[in-house]
Length: 255
Length: 196
Image 1 (cartoon, rainbow over the protein chains, first blue to last red):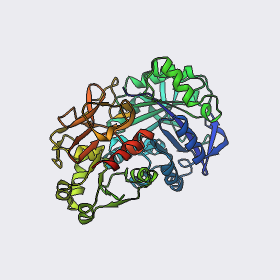
Image 2: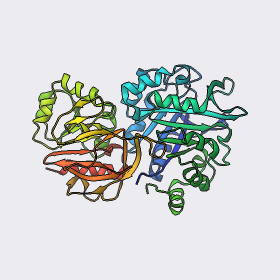
Image 3: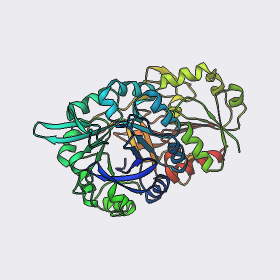
Image 4: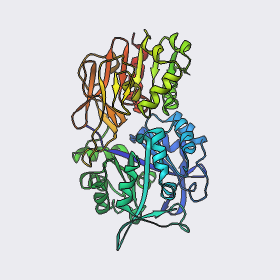
């Protein structure tokens, strides 16, 4: 049976792993390779490295550490941040990443998703969506790596979810911005709404604070994977123990 | 022990070489028919679209080279699919080393495609590659696959059974990615390096 995936997300800035609350006020939490190896050994199913400064600053991800991470990890990993072209993606995939994830550049140029899927296949093209609940429904936000530039992207989240799949996205990471870093639980309402539109794997992001939050997001929102950062970085949850709790709740995990 | 990894242009070349390096094997990556024909053991990785991969192999003059190999050969993911007669992905004739046709995985919110993540495999026939690996999770990511065929040696369940590994004589294939399947994947690669 296919296991639900637990994915620690490592926000990378200037070669170090950082964590902010609601996308702001970042503090350094550790070295990339050290944390990657720790999560691998604790039983993480996959890792995401997100260069949070790359996109707003208009530069691409520094490729050096991708190669070093690829040598250390025997589980899949995804690299996100500032991937604007087929050439950007190719460099990262050739360095050994399984997947690349695009967010703001895809909003500016949706054709990028189609180009990437055509060149590399849908299976390695992840689209990250930062979404807010508003009075008019769910709205996509862009440039969220920089609080001074973060703004409504002028798109409805559900419509964008449909479009990125039609363009060849192989997986969607939905980051519910209001719950990010707050540790009060995943946004089950929003994730369930997106799940109903989503025929590719869906990854929940934003809000994990306890094992029960993971149980709820798998059972109620039926996502394929759950991503979290601060609960793992701070040691609030240890992946191995989290998986035992999920198993106890009848959820298939890789142990 | 020397191993040649066919440069099929896919993006998992680096991770496969790193996985072999962790087993103490330094693999050479090649698209040279002479080098591949002389190799004692060959891996055919692949990520991407079947038509692209086949036309790449053809442009390097490798189709006949691979068909004529008499040493252990392991196709990985798309590399496994290319071993068969035909792929529905781009209506592509493949290498034809094994009988069977690759079809598209159906997609729905209940059963998203690609089939992505860690799935268990159940052995359905003897296969030295699966020694000590019954019931373990492996990392899969594919939008096309094979239903069980006569040379299937293990299956995974995803809206019915799919071939997880295949074998006939010296030709082996795995639909999952051993290079990204943790300790279980490392053991499978080690089993391949031992098999004759």
